[in-house]
Image 1 (cartoon, rainbow, N blue to C red):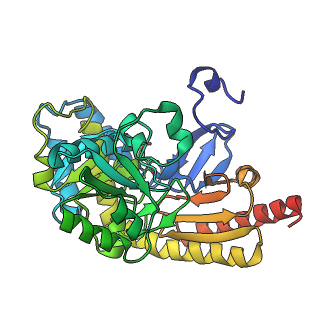
Image 2: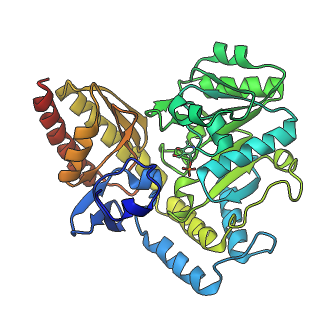
Amino acid sequence: MVSEEDKYLADVYQRFPITLVKGKGTKVWDSNGREYIDCIGGYGVALVGHCNDKVVRAIKEQAEKLITCHSSYYNDTRLDFLQKLITVAPKGLGKVYLSNSGAESVEAAIKITRKYTKKHGIVATVGSFHGKTMGALSITYAQKYREVFAPLLEGMKFVPFGDIIKLQDAIDDTTGAIIVEPVQGESGIHVAPDGYLQKLREICNSMGIVLIFDEIQTGLGRTGKLWAGENWNVIPDIMCLAKGIAGGVPMGATLARHEIMDALKRGEHSSTFGGNPLACAAGRAVLECIVDDGLVKNASSVGKYFKEGLLALKDKHKIIRDVRGLGLMLAAELRFDVKNVLFDGINEGLLMLYSGKNIIRLLPPLVMDERTVSNVLSIMDKVLSKEEDRRNV
Ligand SMILES: Cc1ncc(COP(=O)(O)O)c(C=O)c1O
C-alpha cells in the first residue's frame, strides 16, 4: 500500500506512487513539494493548464452565486456557455445534451441515434475506446474491459480502423451509426489515415447512417485544430466531448444536428448534474481561454516541435519503434514495456502516460511552451538511455 487512499478507494486504477497536491499551468507538485512537468495533464483534461487563473476565477464567482440548478430550470451561466460552445462547434451541430463524463456523453449518443434511426446497430473500430459504462463499453474494443461484463449491448461490430472495405462489409439493415475517434487515444495514438473520415462521411450520407465522432480526447484544440475532424474537413452528425471541456470540473457534452437531437423527447434522457452552473462557468472560461489565448495554434506549433524532438530521440534510441500523433496528442512506441521508463520519469520530475504496455502517451496541457518541451525531451533522453542500459539494447 502506498497511501491510506488504497484502503478506501475501489482498486480499479493503475496507480503511480505519488500524491499530487497542487498544480499550475504545465506543472504539478507532490506532497513533498517536488515539482513535475505534467505530460499526462490529468489524462488529457488540463487543456488550459492546471488551475488556470480565468477558470479558477469563474468557478469562485459562480460558487458564490449558484452551485446547483437542475436543467428543468433555466440558468444564465448555462445559456452563456451553450452559446459560446455552439459558436465554435462544427457547422450544423446546433444542439447539446450536457452530462458529466465522457462515457455519459457516448451513452447519450447511443440513445439519440437509436431513437433517431430506429436501428440499434453501431459499427465501431478495432482499438476504439469510448468509455466503461455498459453502453459505451459495448463499443469499446479491448476484450479485457468487455468480456467479464457480457452480455453487453447487441448489434455492435468492430472493424479495423482505417479499413473502408471491412467497414462497408459490416454495415447491414440494423446499422444506425458509425462511431470513430479521429485519432484513437487509449489504444496508442493512431491517426486516421488521410481520406478515411471523408469516406465515412460519404458512406453515412449515402446510406442514411449517423456519423459519430468521439472527440472526448481529441477535441478542443488537442490535435492542433479546434476539432480533430477539421484536420480532414469532416463534420460528423454527433460529436462527443468531455475531458477538458470544463477545465477539470466534470462535464460531458453530446452535440448533434437539430433534427437528430430532437428525436429525443422530454424525459427520455436526463441527468441531475448535467448542465450544472459550476461546470458551465468553468466551461465558458475554458472556451474563452482556448480562443483568446491562441491555444489551438500553440498546440499545433509546440506539437510540431515536440514531435520533431521525439523523432530525433527515435534516431538516437533503438528502443523507440515509432513516433506518431497530431498537435499535442503524441506517442512514442517502445520495443519493450514502458513501466520502468514511466517510473524513472517520475524520479526525474516528468509525468508521462501509457497506452497499452509499450506505448508512452503524451497529453500535456495546450499551454506548453518549447522551453518546457526541451526539458521534457532531455528527461526522456536520459530515462530511455537508462532503460537501454538496463536491457542491453
Ligand atoms: C476517446 C474517449 N472516449 C471516451 C472516454 C471516456 O471518458 P470518461 O472516462 O470521462 O468516461 C475517454 C476517456 O479516456 C476517451 O479517451
